[in-house]
Length: 103
Image 1 (cartoon, helix red, strand yellow):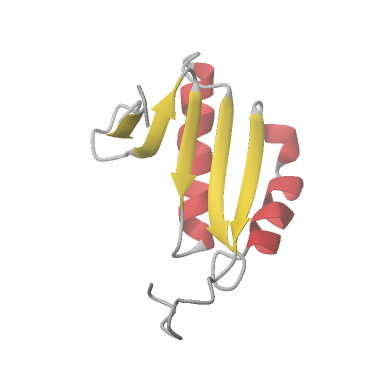
Image 2 (tube, helix red, strand yellow; image 1 turned 45 degrees about the vertical axis):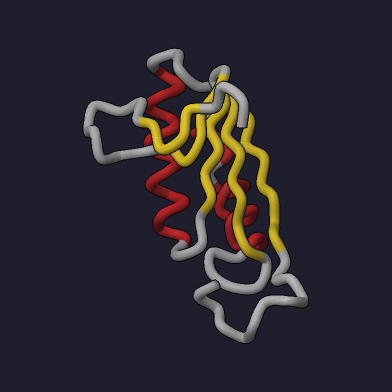
């Protein structure tokens, strides 16, 4: 985590935060709803237009919302309005996790 800004804001509203940010690259980890992904995209588009962001990395589960395939589907649907590179990393549920989806 060397030189990464954690829970930082690049937005006019101070409570809008990025999970991590470094060298015009934002990382967002989302484990709740697809709507949160959409909000992150809008915020990152705003940051891109302020010349603060060039790359977004989204880390999402493959086994629950917002599911990896749904995030990829939405990114493809909106690709004409997303002016920066977006990388999506799908995380599988590890074998040592309990059946609790809130982990």
